[in-house]
Length: 435
Image (tube, rainbow, N blue to C red):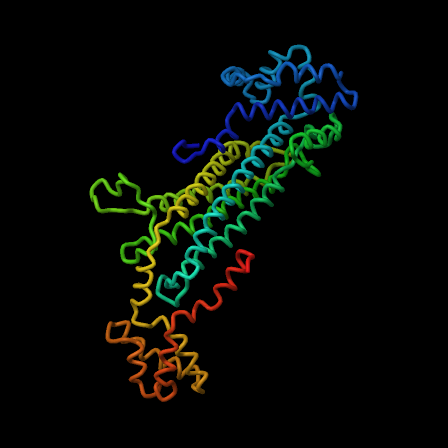
């Protein structure tokens, strides 16, 4: 986790003190359950809470013990015993390390998902506000990077809103799937611990029980979680790239807010670069890169090996912290995005009316011209305009084949920009669910 791309609400989930607190709660709740079913004395379970509930764990001491034991959970349990005392003999009874590690990871990933869902909610709010602001702001739609037909800037933002609505749904499902608890012992058979303990711990930790575990929670759950984060990151990049393109000097239909005192280049004082959205593109690459190791973690040997562990220690915090930062940054970019409707209008007019070519094509077919002939008639008038040799409407009017089918008034009507926006309300109703 790099502080430059981190936010405190997310990073605290992955701090050692938080992790050890979750480990303690798992162990203490397990003792409560063992006491409830009569395996250990009730007073011992209570003493464990009384002696450790408000303890700040000594991370340096745990690290010191681990340098000897070469085992993190044993190091933690040894440290726990130092201030719990005799009752510590009941801690971790019938459990294996993965019962603690996997259940803790489930808690951390579910908490991280909660923050990511809140991040998406904030982004959706920003997108909705700006989409309605520019609902009818005309702009050129592009395919292959080339001018195609008119759209509105509001529709561009509505598309992003719909995409991040799907992102939110995926995050909710990923959170549900990852939030499972396993307290089932060395190979998942409950040989030395009652299944009721798992039920109790799961309830207390806000999880559901894993229907069947080996020594670990199946890693297909984790793969789905990190794959979801990767898809969300790709959506971040898609919107970021759109803004980067719109900020190009030759386009300049929108740009990132440039604050007072901000500098764009160490060499060129005039520069206003899309640094935030370029940064988002890079961060998206990182999050996507963590999905493949998560998928490779699914295939563990038999009931468990440890090959997944080093991967998850890194991608758990790194993927969630990075995506959290990226979503917050993207929200700020949208909130503060500077939009230039006048430049959008200029770009709409840049091709001398060629953006209306399909309407002319269709109108000719309605007059009885075959599609092939109509296409040829329209294209032969369009190509000179591409070369800067005239205006499309004028050339069409001078073409006897075209003017023989379409009157001047009919041709003029085909160049009406508002025609393209007649279903904007319908699309907005679909996206935002409002009349």
